[in-house]
Length: 297
Image 1: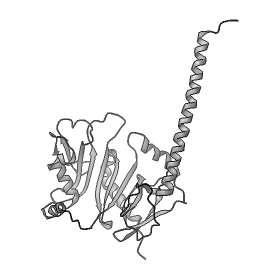
Image 2: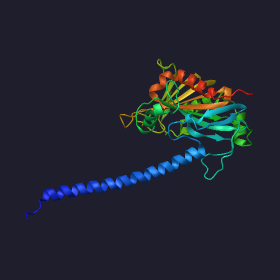
Image 3: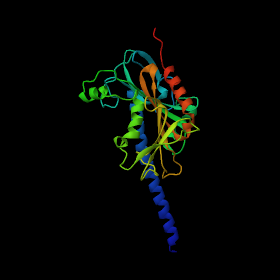
Image 4: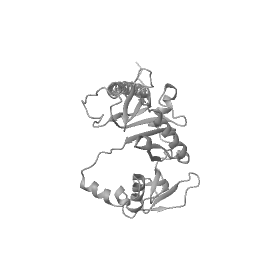
């Protein structure tokens, strides 16, 4: 009997190893899939946040913000609607039946530019890519937080209220960055420098100057605003700044403004390539959020 060539033995061993690895990977994928299905079922049943393309059977979330009744279709939701006095992330918490008398404290939606379409079967692939892949995309996260007008008993808060300040919260944040950057976790030796207004966007910009500001860091942000920083800032946009390690990656911008109709603060997050369209983005976000409003009967 002829001896079996060593090359044949090596090839057979290689095939066996590939087969074994395939079985192991298949098992891991089955476990991961089962875990995801369990999590998806919990999200859909407990928090009413669809984890797959929207179906007509998923109901809307109802409630009110400062007396304004809202009905939010759930295929828009990115995070569950949170109501006053509760956290949706508390394990084992009972979810009561909600009505228009339920006070909404915050919610977040995820929509696709430019029509602000929610997650649907025809854009599911794009939706998933926006969450998994680096680079620019056309999905925007919109978070709304209702303001709390309850009086505070904190002595520090009362002292702060008695101190002369600029008119609104966005102006205070901006001036904090410009005058006291250390309060925002910015290292010593870094300061903000206000530069010439940006011609493309029409915004007033300020950039961090100092050692390390040439590279992307958690604290490294360029600031853009519309309004008078000494009195009232209507829009404040914080964008990542500095060179990114991944050439495919792009910076994110956090675009903040007030929604007076709901007495709420809004933050829109998008990739920085959309910054020149900030006015249109803000107008469309306001229109979208107000479209959830239900007229009083």
